[in-house]
Length: 188
Image (cartoon, rainbow, N blue to C red; front, side, top):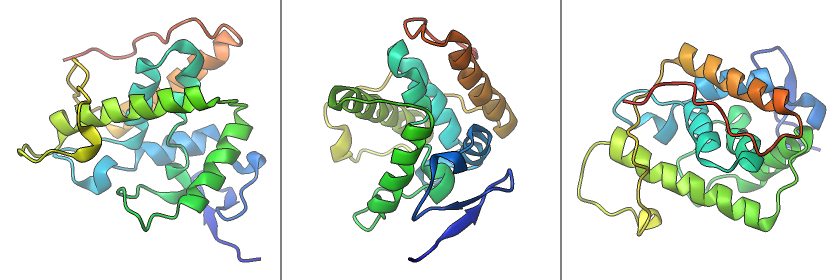
């Protein structure tokens, strides 16, 4: 079997071709996502995958907030890849499945559709607020309105702390999945 190990910030090693739930660590996910810029770095100012994850959690119903926070967790181990046909979906899917197992996310098809719609809605908002302005229509965003609040990106240290706080809030609730996340930052 071929191996493709990466070392994480915690010092763990993860074989991205054969990941195991015990290899996945929330602190690694938080740190790695906080340091990965969305859009392959093409946004006007640094905006991390971790901040995207936090915003995903905020716009979803409480029962899906942890899933929203971890929706892009595979990027912590495989990096940000601009949407392309050549993207290694099998590797990303394997890591996503292991993350879901590690955090006991049992998602239905409807849940996955809600996550994808929240991701697309956030993409429309990020495009409006973070990308260079132009008049080109993105086909994936046809008919998808951006969220009303504007995005003012956090620093890496702010987003890392916020990601961890959101995760800890979720843990404190246990099975109280109807409690919404506290808003952790002001809106501009």
